[in-house]
Length: 201
Image (cartoon, one colour):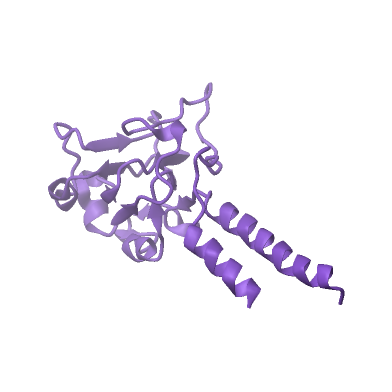
């Protein structure tokens, strides 16, 4: 192999790894709560459709990510930063750290998706207080720890709750697509340097 070609291969490899690292560092995630089971409760058996605590334990949550609750109007989505409110399974409207998300529709059993952005770092608690807290007490509750990640994108740099305005007469909101990366996203320099040195060996 000519000397010029052998020097070009490591440089191309380093460049490709640099681009890959930059792309990986600029992603926000949509988390569908409960996976394919969604956010549902069976009132006949008093059971939730999934073990939401187990689901949450297998996820990594960062600022700028979204939780998508595929559900219906029989359940509620309460977000709080207050452990006492979470433990009581009841929304405390006097607590300015508690938010009630709903579709604004009053029909029973109406399909909907509730999209909740993660805008506060640290412990975040979610539950359904429907049926006077029975749903929460029967498993429709989970807590997450939101990490800094890339930080908030400019579109979410406001106090919660950020709620998309509903379209005209829409009963079902489609899930939000991934948020575009902030213009000041940084690359993991250690990873790039490691890849650079590894390619030179």
